[in-house]
Image (cartoon, rainbow, N blue to C red; front, side, top):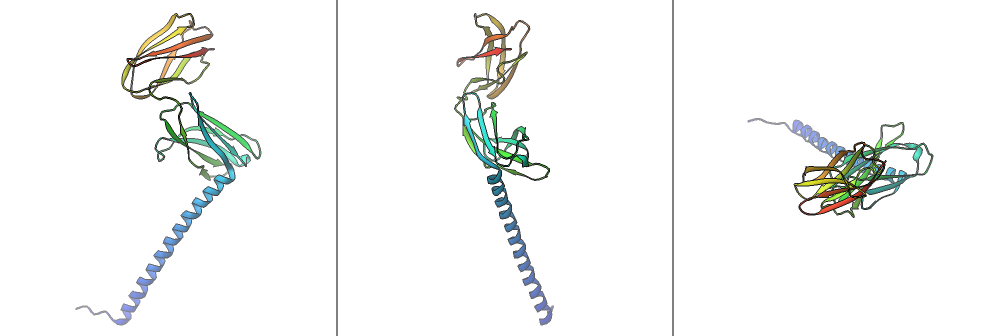
Length: 228
């Protein structure tokens, strides 16, 4: 049988009690630090960013925001998410040299869902610190079942456009002149979701307006574009 003296027992009891108290203090400090950090981020957001909002049109989601102390900002990273958890950077905007209040806008043309969440990552000038804005939700006004969106219009030597397909299917792509002449004709295999398509424009495309047409077994769509 092992016998523990009263003196050793008291020492061990005091040690265990002190250890429990230290754990509680550390836990409280960590909670306090977390709350302080969240509060600081919220204060920075309110101090720097205001009127962060988004509006949807037929071709893009346009974001806008106002910075109260623009000279303190280095750059902005625009981030988007369709589930509110996984955000990815879609653009980096360098802050202007203007002092005090400045307004910014950004147009997201790659709309791949009817509801998209956006936030800003703001980087402070001459500092390693950054913080995030609040998250905003933009509901798209575009019907995402089979549609065409020209990425850059007017276009130069290549035509870039997004085509959202409701399913995996074959699609016929044609480009017409305004007189109805077919200048380009090709078939593609589109997959469900967003398809980014590039069509080189030969020297036969003189500056002017043209019609892009996509035919599937479901519907026919056309959109006009300008060749520079």
